[in-house]
Length: 307
Image 1 (spheres, helix red, strand yellow):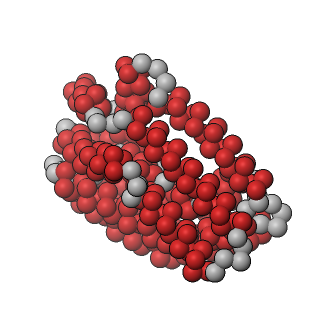
Image 2 (cartoon, rainbow, N blue to C red):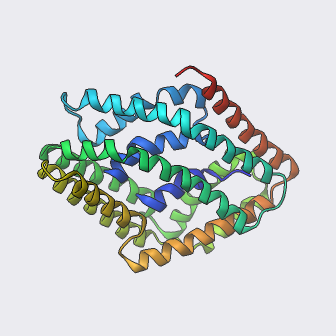
């Protein structure tokens, strides 16, 4: 089985969203590549510290004083990930391969989602210390830069998810979902395409609610990094508590409507993916299996390389 691009890429973002941005900037690219979201996995993996550095720089406009330590932290994170997380990711890919030939239940699919989430949480835990250091080192100008970056990203997000008629939105979502499914299964036939379209049309997805939660999270992040950077003498335990409190609000929103929505859409995603997988032909399932095996082989090759 393969979690479509949605499973691997969107679930961690939906589950958690600086750690969220700063940590996400550091770690999601590692996770995405480790789980095969990049077609040049072996080439891209070794470049992650550099790619992550420039990704973070786009958000905070890294200073000369911050740059050396940030690069060291990213190098250290990748070394840890190679040693500790690649073997666990290989086992996760093997579990997916074992499921691929057969029909799936929503429960089995959710179990895969949980496995992906566990690997993200491991990265989050490891990246908390460098993310805290970076948050505390930010200047007011850098926080303003981050806020402007959020605004730019928000304009793009609205264009993708909120602009246009409901029919136009659905068409964009169908195009994206089709592309992600076909990455693993190959070209979808007419029946599969129709089923995918029907799943999307009946989805509980609510872009307006997503937009509201997105803004809440961004404001929370800005407030948190502003507090952490404005009080550099804060006791380490208090600083970690401040950061962890934000993380809790990211993974378990204080908005009850969002929590209910997240639970509904997660159950829906599990069932929808299982139904789509169960429509896959034997040839498509074999293709997905081989795709996952290719990622496993790539990760094993990376594990065998000298640090």
